[in-house]
Length: 258
Image 1 (tube, helix red, strand yellow):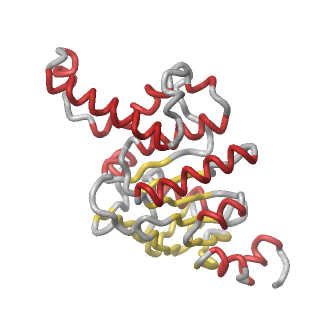
Image 2 (tube, rainbow, N blue to C red):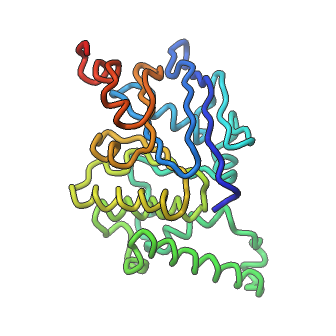
């Protein structure tokens, strides 16, 4: 993957929209090669956090760093080029593209051959294209899609389409993978399959994963660390077991005193 493993450090990030504070001095650190879950009730600020990390929103104050590299305020394509890839809650696959073509979209930022070289089919461009195709096959095999490469992605079951999106993000060779509700709307078998792939991404590839997910069973099984948000503030953090028993977390989710 791109560069040496680095921590993703979020420090005192505040986001305001027309006087409304969506995030209020939120801080947490995603350690290299870990799964870090960001959880909280609806409206807690999880999506806003992801949008700041990926550059869709600009923080009003605070900073986001990947190792020593400042990401704060950069455009999404610049952040992606620095090693942060994202999937979205809603499917966004090209309707008629095959799985292989969908995954190849993730290689775009890594392409070095220019338009003219590719158009003229120069040897350097042909070599690069072959390497990208080989890498796509490797990643497809890693996530269990090796037999699906020539199938139209849009015809596959929902859970498999979500894996295609995850694979497309992996094809960007990220240091950090942002997964926005990766198992939402899936059957129990699909959830188990995707959760196993996410664990393999961490354990086999050493990629850091930031996970927003409402399925607490998946969070508790996968996460090495958890940050809990409520009304835009960080109210707890720690291991899954620590967070699960935190009175502030119980109150935020259940609305009762713990």
